[in-house]
Image 1 (cartoon, rainbow, N blue to C red):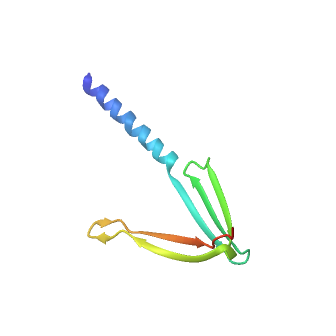
Image 2: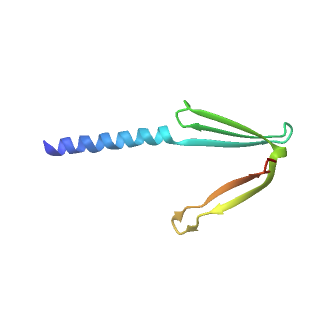
Image 3: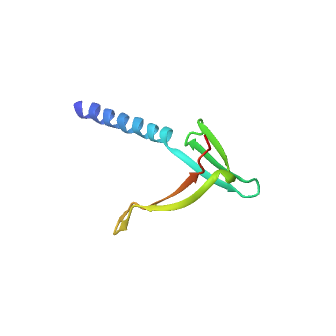
Length: 92
């Protein structure tokens, strides 16, 4: 009897963690539109109920860099590529 309750509790914990993972997961899209002169960053979670859209003018961008992080050896692959966008400082 105790093992059935323990299995049920472990199953419920896994279910709750899976639902939290799906809810907290994010999908991020970066769109450079040269014709409109904008940089658009769209963020949403995997459930599509929370969305965020931010738009910047390309004129405000000072520098863009691609950064490689992590490593890949054997069966371990932690490589990640990030884009760093540096904006011009606004005059005070």
